[in-house]
Length: 442
Ligand code: GDP
Ligand code: GDP
Image (cartoon, rainbow, N blue to C red):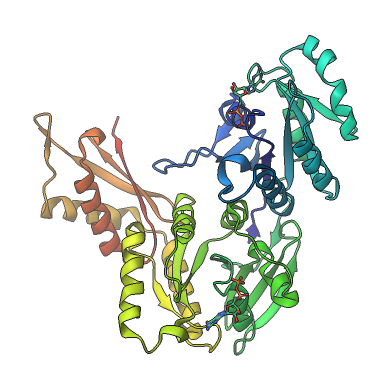
């Protein structure tokens, strides 16, 4: 079973240099095919793009990384650091009209120290005249190759994209894993206990552990074999490195989270029992669903509240309130410190994975649809009763279904929810997200 690896391309640069213009230029270019997963609300700051048959994830780090409490310089620095760690290719965008600023120089100095592929993109070069006049000043960066472009007017754009295309990972840069390997990644804010949890798991009874390097970048993923089951533990944000050395202070980064989400089937999000669910947790949980991943919520440090029933109730109540959109996700409690709850984790991962990958015969789905419609007639829309003709499964991971109707527009949210619930119940999909699309027949 191959694990899909594709490039993460990050846009880095000061505000107003034209990152989002370039982002839109790339994602909306006629040559780009943006991931067509329907029904998903997407953050316009990251997008999966197919370019010449190669898939990559384009991320505007200026749009996603959190600037709160930081100076402007610190903000760009953090973007650059996250990109250096997590991206395969960095597009460092500079403003051709403004020239090189001290903040640009600082970023350039950081970038010089990595061996990632970096494109120094000088934007707002709107034509050949500007190129002659404005480019010279950028050579003080000491960079051999500069790419003059106009994100707004397309000048130089295709030259840049052709070069980028050559740097993208080939889709066959893949490594083989045993069939049915479940890819799991752990998320959670710094200090929630990710490293401790992973060390606990690695030390677990009868767990056979081998390192799988080269699945991506510099990270080391871990293949766990437990009985006949295989799990790939994806190293988010160098958790294991940190677990060993304890020195590196991890900073939360959405780019890191996205990079790991790209690769996993199931996201385990850790929540701190002492702290309760935080806004950052809620955000990450939202991202897991935008990416259509299986999800387990794991409240860690349960040892700290184990005798406090009131607090326990409060924690669970707050979680339910903060993320009502993932009511299907198993909610577990554990302690990486004492080992409590760890035994239940892998069976839960297993059952989520089985549901996540399940495939159903069309005949059974149609029977289910028929029964659902008979039990609760669809409403009238524009003087006609809504009809649902047939359904089929159009994908898995997570399960996706299409239902053909005489008027998809007329299907009210509440009826759609009813159908979704009937599908969930009828198919035994109580632990995973499912996607149900209603389409017009003809
Ligand atoms: P970001 O903050 O880096 O994402 O920058 P934006 O993409 O929002 O662009 C900042 C400003 O620069 C906007 O007013 C854009 O219209 C302008 N801009 C972006 N690209 C170009 C370009 O290629 N040429 C010119 N002349 N202006 C541009
Ligand atoms: P990470 O930043 O998410 O990888 O968190 P660490 O694994 O480094 O843990 C952060 C701190 O929380 C360390 O001091 C751990 O000893 C502590 N910790 C982790 N898990 C637990 C737990 O289950 N109970 C308690 N009481 N402390 C924990």
